[in-house]
Length: 129
Image (cartoon, helix red, strand yellow):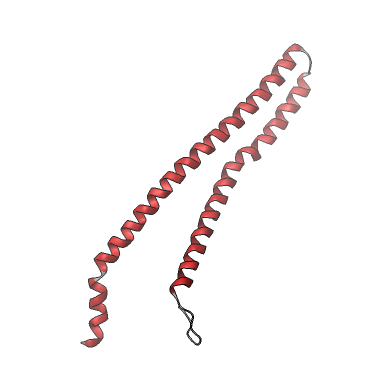
């Protein structure tokens, strides 16, 4: 009978633990939604600026080819170079997303590690869990 006291105590704290975790998850989701929308707006403006710059380059190339300053062959080569430069520029969105996830994950890990160290008083001969 005495050995079952821990089970009863654990069962009685279930609701408070559930409410605690639910509150923390709601806080995390609120922060994530705010950060996510900000990041997506910044990403949208960066991609839009790249599209406008590449459109400007293409318009200049087409205009100079139309007026006879460049030949068709030179135009094709410049357009191919612009297309080759376009891929890594637009891949930055993926790279920045991965960097942002890695940075936020490492901050949370380090914050957790510091909290864990602060909660344990290190006494000689006692190894913290």
